[in-house]
Image (cartoon, rainbow, N blue to C red; front, side):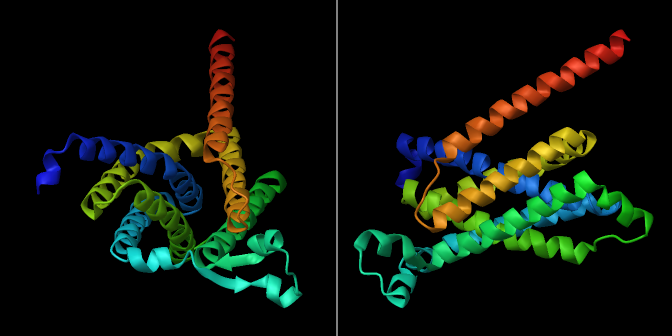
Length: 251
């Protein structure tokens, strides 16, 4: 327990916790958009249960670090199937277990966000409500679980790369998910109140999906660029909302 008295450990815990919270933003947005399709009394339950499952998944993966890291070993080699011998091409055509999970998760996120944007533009959501058709709690929870696995894998690999003590990793993950649980309701309500923000959130998820797909083929897009672009877009949207509010009060 001497490591508890080491200031470097506390600095690592703080840094990793902040990073886990940042990485969890896309998870909150995705859960908020999915849960908004449910009846009002079920939305909060879906959000909290989804985040609780994310916590369980991440802690379970942390206790299976050896298995998680084994996912980085080559799993599928398309270069041998295609008869390509160039080392450069072999690098891009070889998929590990982690790459495969990121690829499937990225494609699912691209499909889901694109579908949601299409529904918003075509007004198909309103038509479904008029016809009395709605998604079920189970279907929403199933979609949340699928993306929880993808986001959790990314989160755990980041934790393993930054910290050596598993106790610190678990503490950072638990703190980050607790913060996400406390903020999920406010974020969800804000997104649902403002259609333009919801569209921006869907575009954000589409961008994350593209990033995950590219990462599966060893074409990493620095997340700092993605988050900076989205933060700038959110700032501009906030100014638009503020401007609209001022015009409404002046009129």
